[in-house]
Image (cartoon, rainbow, N blue to C red; front, side):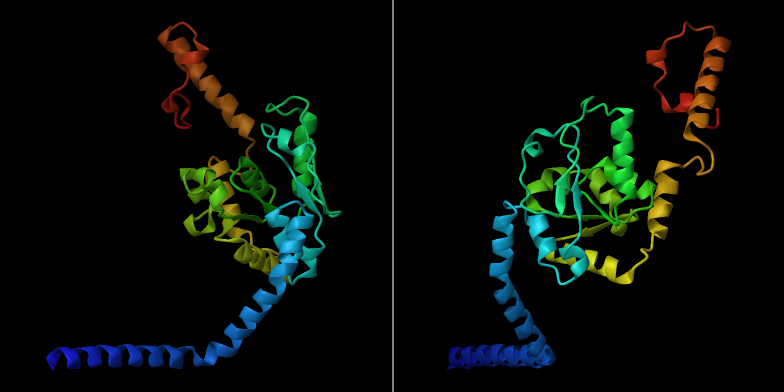
Length: 256
């Protein structure tokens, strides 16, 4: 008898819990149903676009955006200098997307011309999207909003690295990081809807991380001063010059 009463009590508790959940969700039922209908009806469109652009999920996600700015945005894909081979014959299947450059004359050690092309491509961009690369910091330097999206395919160069976390806005960095493509697209839509981006946190990161010795003094001035301090210290101690031995942080400290 006691066991039966216990079973009835458990069923009653579960029923009350279900009713309570339904009451909480009741104001949102219409919105949830609408979202499900939109997702179901647009999924075939997304899959078709993904096939058209050769499985490029990111471009496909942009082209299914509700915002015309993203659907029609011109996309420049810049391969890393050490990973150009997969992109040299890539067919994006999108008239508003291009891979540039597809090769670098000097390889990983970029030439002055390569650097200028890179700089102008950043300046021409309304936003910069990266997986995890120093180009994201370069974009912050020239005051361009930077975005990224976590993806299991790139976990080895995102979540499994320490520095990726430092770049995110949540950790005091400058990169707006999304957990998936739908969230990423919504963040890009928000950027274009708001117009002028808020770059205060990005500027603070650049001042703290890239130019900690001051934003108004050229970096080569600090470098030359440090080299002169090292040379003076070497001369005073009468030690033989050894450029390879000058590698300790205290040797080039601004306080020396």
